[in-house]
Length: 47
Image (tube, rainbow, N blue to C red):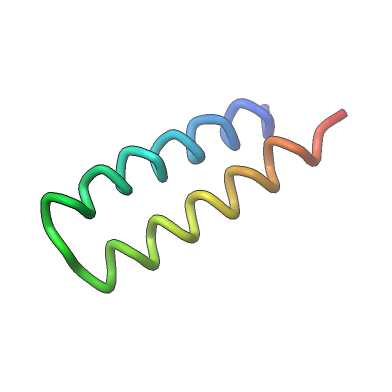
């Protein structure tokens, strides 16, 4: 389950990167970084 949530959060972060080009914002950047880091950690923690 953690692997699936990590995968979803990673792609949400990628989608927010696309959003960043449309609308710049510091909060968006922090959310992007948080989703990418959390998603990657959850995805790789399950073996």
